[in-house]
Length: 223
Image 1 (tube, one colour):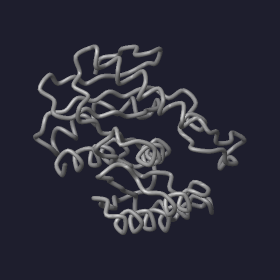
Image 2 (cartoon, rainbow, N blue to C red):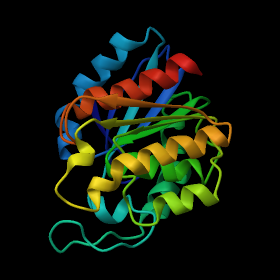
Image 3 (cartoon, rainbow, N blue to C red):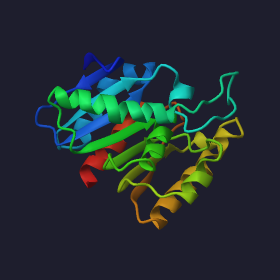
């Protein structure tokens, strides 16, 4: 992976000059630690060439949240910075990497946890991305399912996944994630979106790199 700065943000790039797809992913420090493993897993799961640009999120709860919400752990609440992060991707990141020679025609967006929810939210805002990989997304987020039920994505394919122990979390709000992700899949299916819900073994903190890789690979293989 190559570290670059695009439009003032720290980015990590896997560049394949023969790529058919460009994968965009917001990441945190943990994602960065396993990013090379994720890329290798995608390569194992799909024979189609791709490039990946992962950009660093500094304030996870604020930059990826679609609207404000109370804190789940500690005292840090969720902000409403998702619109600013989307603006960065569309107005700064994609033009910048296009100038560097990347083909931005076929773009996929994905992420893990709150970045997965952000990616889902983006699907309702723009048709710029052909597919969305929402790996273990924070579908428990307050008022999210009500939002999903009242709106329709502009993206044609959406991958969903969850760990089979995630709905057994001690936190009552986060324990709603199982029912929420099932509702999300049902809503998307009813709306005619090409979608799948894949269950993985383990809790929320297990195999985030492989789960994200499975999402991107499914999209690449089914578009």
